[in-house]
Length: 249
Image (tube, rainbow, N blue to C red):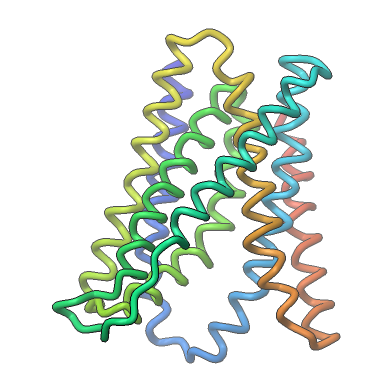
């Protein structure tokens, strides 16, 4: 059990440090960065679908069998992510953006990012409870998703009126909620019997929603045949990476 805690906390700490990646994007031309991000999003979508269908759902069936409860838990993860995103998109503001008045969309982004990172922590913790291989695969899927996500979040905060230093600080602070999520998952797993039988498919539902609802629509905005083909290649590579991790088992 100690190794599970060490792997989980170390993995979540690495994921949290990705929030500082905005610092390294400042020297990159914005047009080039935007093009690069689309391919990262493609890879991330493939990795998240791959983790959900290759690792998490099979693990849930292994624990609970081919029962309707697994499907219900997966759907509950999708519904939960849908509800959280609806809440995040609820508010809108038309006041000018200044350092004294950061735009509410930036504040809502921080709230949403905190919830999102907490869920990531839950997912990572639950995955390691299911097995080291599952935990590593899930951590990688989260990392691939977080890189473009955190770059985007940093840009949103800057656009919303935060200084560069404040944007980095607040982005990092929200990332730390992932560690809290991991601790909660591991603590519940230690005291609640069969907690992973719910959390693992629940995590899969979250990944399916994020990849299908948030990432895939972004990719469809690109109409160029060549760029679309490259996106497809990156998507398939994301799936292949998840598939290759089965060799760790």
